[in-house]
Image (cartoon, rainbow, N blue to C red):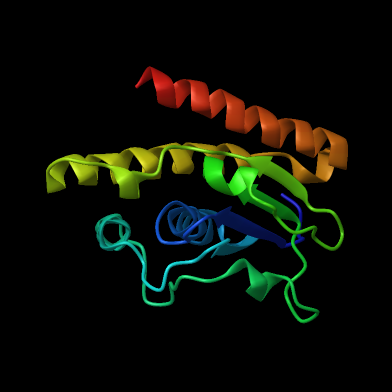
Length: 172
């Protein structure tokens, strides 16, 4: 692995579940190489309680998590992003800002577990599926040989991870 620490931003519409889960997985599983952030294009004031419950059950620290607007990452004093991922279809179709330095970007869209219907157990299952899919993508991403890949190769691999894992998600 390289000695560089990469800044990674996960973007979704509400920043209450998927992007929060992705931020937490990256921070807690491979945080020595990455600094993880998340934001919403139209953030909610609160985190989804099912997302918080799931993260706690997986042993994650949720004490510093909060819903954030993408504007926090656009100012002159904002961290410069190396990677930006959208994790929901709606955010991919919205007007997303340009980022200084043109970070590698990827769309890792998946269904919104917040919209799951049914019993609480069925809703929890949707959140567990989201967690598993994001975990698979993040672990594949973090295993890339960053020091041996140029920007174009990194972009290609990021795109492939989104497509490959989306196929796997649909087979479950």
